Amino acid sequence: MNYKESFLEYLQIEKRYSPHTVRSYINDLDQFALYLSSLGVPDDPVAVTSHDIRAWIVSLMDNGYSTTSVHRKISCLRVFYRYLRKEGIVKGDPLEKVVLPKNRKTLPVFVEEKAMKDLLDNYPFENDYAGIRNRTIIEMLYLTGMRRSELIGLRNCDVDLSEGIVKVTGKRNKQRIIPIVRSFNHRLEEYIKVRDENVVTGNDGWFFTTDKGKKLYDKYVYNTVNSYLAMVTTIEKKSPHILRHTFATHMLNHGADLNSIKELLGHANLSATQIYTHNTFEKLKKIYKQAHPRA
Image (tube, rainbow, N blue to C red; front, side, top):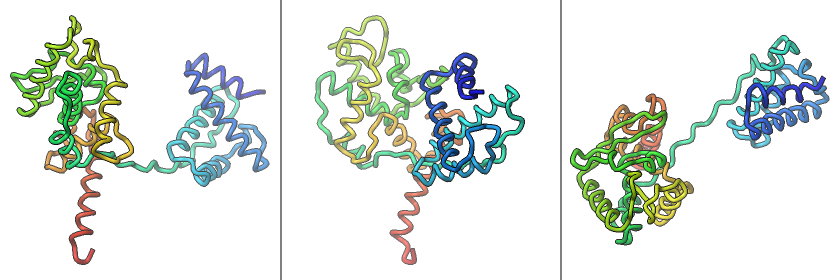
């Protein structure tokens, strides 16, 4: 019996997985079968043992696969064997006692404070609508920590200059309020004035618009942030999300508590925010090594 073909139909028809996901699953199964063949083990799921799967994991790691890739491949096997048990083809689960390698936590990349200060205080942004809008975009992302999608989705009614707040609609339409500093309040007033003088915004009410008054799009915001950050930092990633990391890291370095940062970022739980403490700890270790005579 061709188990892979019936599994393919199960993924496509019953699970309704995307074509891309189905291809990935089949490729992973083919790779596992090839590995078993190299060991002289028959391509028969009934004959596979937990030892075979653990040996494959070791082989993948030895060949330079990341822990994320290994987790994905083993996840494919779990779905495959769950299907086989459901169909009564196998009784046991060879993955039951398989322990996966731990994912290495990567620290969030952020822009140094001096670089952000140079950009916002010293860089000569153009004084036309595009220049003022671009600076306001960068400053909004850095001063609030909002996501790119949240910035694009801002409407005029979400920005309350009299109260000094921005209402942000995040994931799952969850709303949060972010305060804005007085100096940025003035920047927003300038932006609104120039926008209203130069752009016909229509009735959509988007806060940030293109030169033609349309809603901003993802690529524009990405390219804007990327091009300006490239002038002040050499970090590899220069996306809008880096400014979110930068906001959180700088806030933490200046004494903000984790719960406050969690609320400002719109995280569902504190564990998502705690990763920023690693940056602060790494900074402390560096200072310690430089300053302590016995370090």
